[in-house]
Length: 460
Image (tube, rainbow, N blue to C red; front, side, top):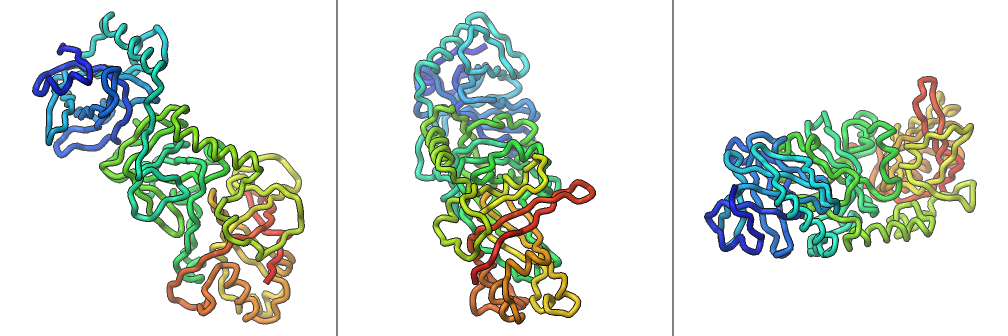
């Protein structure tokens, strides 16, 4: 057992083996080191020093033995770690052959039990008193927060391939079998910016736009737990973060993800964790967390569930057969489970694809009495397929005496540039506008939900 010192004293013990007790403020995602060990970097503070936070490089022989803090304010007691210095920065190194640790909850209680420990650890009566003292200090000094940074942004301000920090609540963690990687589902109350769609309309028949980043839709009982207003961003962990989901504990808690990036696939945003990404555990009373919640609640009090981006652009291309209605999100529609004879939803969405796309097909003799189209609808919360059938097709598009008149309406609906031929095989960008629509819900013989666009008319 080394000498227990405060973090302020660490600089005076370079080269020594010491014991440390601190509050875990931040940790990097577990990854392989350059050798055969697994490594995670913690940052800790105590009563003696909150800034700068002390980095602790933890090396262990198996990933499940890395310390994983569960909540904001959790404490770690480190035994026999070596103090080192590089480029004037002082840090501690946990070496699994010689060191040990124990993690404790940060809640103020007289009971002192660790919830994770490494071999050879022994908890003495003196250790218990020190843990109680640090807990009391933490409760009385709520000064530990997410910090400020020019890199901190909301989901409404993300840009492609620009690294940033995100304060968010983790909704879920899952493994994506298609890409063989773990994925976090995170939310901060904001709506991601709408994206242009690249491709051509014919792509939808053989290679339709995906409805989500993950390989298949999550079970309804999981989606029910997601926030229905604001974007739930999918965040992929790259190959260095193997088994991330097995050991990632802060689900349903606020965190700050540091040094992540966003990319775009098929018109969908997703985040990406890299080798240098880190997690900072946050209190519900953290200033930025409080601000995120306040903004979300203000929007809710106004009865606004639609994407705020839809208010920046006129959505007067359509009219619906109802007035004074509560608009809902596509996530509301997707997880709807109540038994009702005729559930009907009013939404503000974008139509990002149609199938079939060849307008001439709708004027063939055998199609005149049965016109049907599949639309891909999108808002900031979800994508769904909805059909436009027979009489509703006629009502939606109105008088389309020729294929050219229908093509003109489809171009405006999908945001296709005026000069662009919609039957062209070349790739082009389209910028779908926001529209109001009504969606009905039915079930087929197998219990699958079928969405239909109805009671909506194009004003073109």
